[in-house]
Image 1 (cartoon, rainbow, N blue to C red):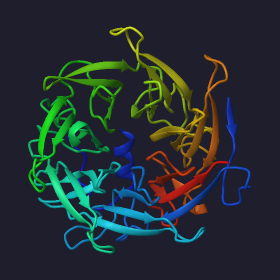
Image 2: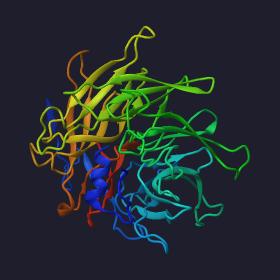
Image 3: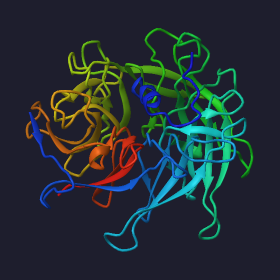
Image 4: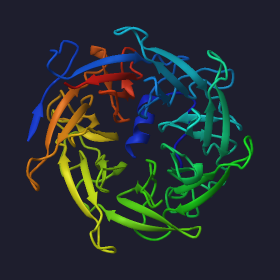
Length: 442
């Protein structure tokens, strides 16, 4: 059975859906000294026409403006709480306010989407692409494009590129970001659907390709590259997107595995690159390549307890390709979260600096000590001076929640723009429905 429909943003239900998907403490707050990390709330969502509950991270344009989606909020004549696409414009003068503009509000129904959950992606022409978890006649989700106005100040134009059919055989509930591949085609994942009913009666999810039409305005063509649940151990219900290596192979996370899809004359074959064993960090997602061909990612963690035991609080890992083709990949756990001041349940995309430090967000933990019920953190992982030594974790910011005008549940990770980090929180902020924040690390 698939998740219940969402007619409006509902905090508890929405959070549950996503979740089923050596510490040095440097706390940062509004009174932080100039020498330490400084967090600033750039925008508070209000659960009105401006949106509510941003699950995904942000993407920048060349001018430093930020773009993202909200799962809920937004009001149209046909749908309240169906979600939005927004732009946050950088201040004209240093220290001035950031300005939010809603680029599109989803309408739902048979011909439009509902509840975008993943990050956006730009093409070379400045068009935005994303997916909604719901919408269409079967309420199975859509893929959309937003085209910028031809004249300054005009409206952006939405085009629905694909509606997932009601029988779910071609996928259902696309909850992740899309990726452009060779030739300008789009690639993504769905949490449910496919050719098997072994996962909640709705299929175990798919990896799909959308082929760009030869003529502008033509129909995009969808192809299922792989359906999960086909063979034992091949993964299930991917909640994050896919990434490409230089050869054109696809990588992603599904359930407790990291998978690879290789194209051989139009037929895609799945290889399980790494299967996380029970008893360790688990729930892998949000992968990205490092400079040496290794893949880095977060493991959200497993279980639903109030304290971190048996590594349920997740971690950050690296998997390294073999020197000899055909040998297994090697997994290295860089850090395991304790659920204390360091955070718990890392989520979203990771960022790197030139020194090899890794930056990310944890959805829970932080100021409440050894409990994972706190508001989450922004963390830094620094590589060891000598190979084989442990990485060092630094808590750059511990979110304090709405009572202190700060965020809660930073699920989208971080992006780096001109030396600053930017991210979103799904909850918290002045109205409890999320915020956009910046973080400056000296």
